[in-house]
Image (cartoon, rainbow, N blue to C red; front, side):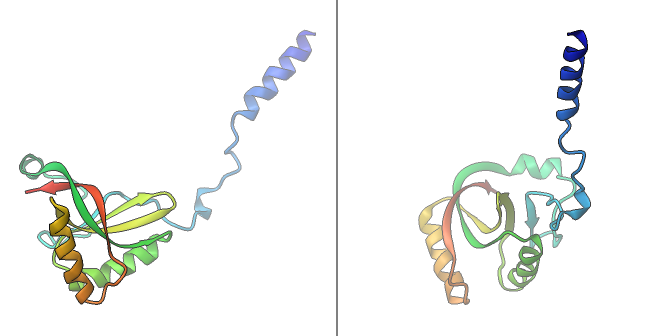
Length: 139
């Protein structure tokens, strides 16, 4: 009987490690460093280190952003961002909400400001743009 209990609990402890067979090199998309920020001021693809003084100046508030693209592939998102950087002047944000990478644009405190920006972007040829509620950075 002791042997039975030993084998039962031994097998149970081995069964807990269910990811020993999973090879992470087979994953198609790289793990994103989110949020990835495209900032016209600093002209970098994203911030590796956040400046404490900038954080003290910026504050978070609830507002609106424009969602300009979404995809399940990080490669597609990066290619689109290169195109967006050439035509758009405000900051571009990438966030991952499973299963999509979402590309959002701007920081608008009111829906009216976001609606005006959406109309301006639509004139530039971006037709599938919609307004989403988000935490924004106030300067």
